[in-house]
Length: 187
Length: 349
Image 1 (cartoon, each protein chain N blue to C red):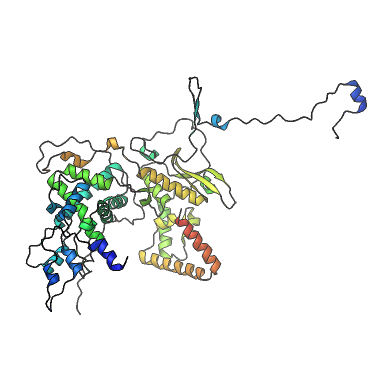
Image 2 (cartoon, rainbow over the protein chains, first blue to last red; image 1 turned 45 degrees about the horizontal axis):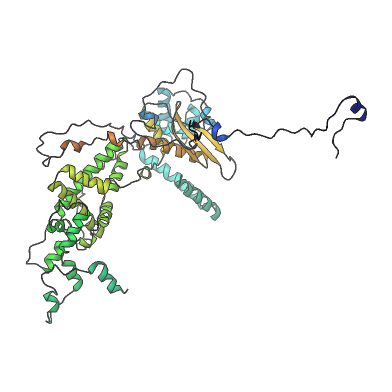
């Protein structure tokens, strides 16, 4: 009813037409059957003019592999990376993967780590040494492994601490943790 | 149906047409000391020759096992001798399948392991062993014997556990029958025929090897494996995601070495998807199979010769691909081979 109309004076000097309100044309969507990248269209030249469109489902690549055509790149001869990469790779899973690897630690530093760790393992813990020498706690374990009885003792103490913490949980917390562990079994 | 009649119909129904004396004399003796147990008597009787020949024809060995005595030998477990000598001490002990079962077991193990190793050259050793057991192990042999219809023909006697040996179970006694049949086919014909027999009954069965591949830490296993192949260390990348922070997210993660994708996995958490991607990468490596037309087996060199110890002309043989052995990790430097335990003599103080 209240269509936008030109003012009376203006309508005298210029022509107007009884048009509809401006509307967008109806959306025409391209046929996804034909327009996907992996669709193969074959048209028969018979009188029927049948068109076959082969569009395999976008599922996981088949894990079946044979020795003639292995699915694993480990079994294919290694091709050095083509000059000019074949496009950007998907993003790494964790933000920490984008951090640069720390410099390799030298032999003298390894000897120092060993001396500190084996002399006083309680004061020179793995995390403390890792921060001191700019490496990871796992590296400290590998490079300066404690003798087996001491390792067992430390592991026993750690397990006892964990068991004490678990003992303080309520029923609900224990159930939630158990459910999470069970779910892991089905990964 | 009552309990007694059900038992009669199931296992104790004995065909009597082929027996020399029926009813047995001991059943009709009327002395004070005479005791007759019909169940024991039924267990001691041999199955009718018609049933034995029908069995041999049913499994396609009508031309190999031509006499009922051969079939009967294959279906008699060595535990039956205990029962037989107790009740018929004067008659000669019936031939049993103990030696045949041992020979047949060795042959089946040979055929299964060479076939599986040639089909999956990269399979880890413990999985190969599990697959061989799944194809020709004792439980499979027992179920194949049931499928063949050898249960009413089996003659055995239940043995309780003793300090030196475990108890004898029905499935163990049944499992001896297909093994004995394999050995008989090898003896009557040749190794190639025995292999064909094992293939048709055992190696044609579908076994899911993928379910046998389980890893405590697939990411670590993949890292060690990729290092063994001298490639760049694997890195996980997020391919697709939807529903993050909702109650049903889906993440698709791929594991890459350089620009090559090793494996892909999906999950409802990033860790789960990465775990599955590592498993997928290892499955793609370990479950690589040789196509059937390129399968070459070492035992094919024996050809159709009946005597494998004096080969006239061995068949030509091109060996298949030798796979990379699996990378062992967290093994503390040990190979995993168990040395036999030495008995510690108790020292009396």
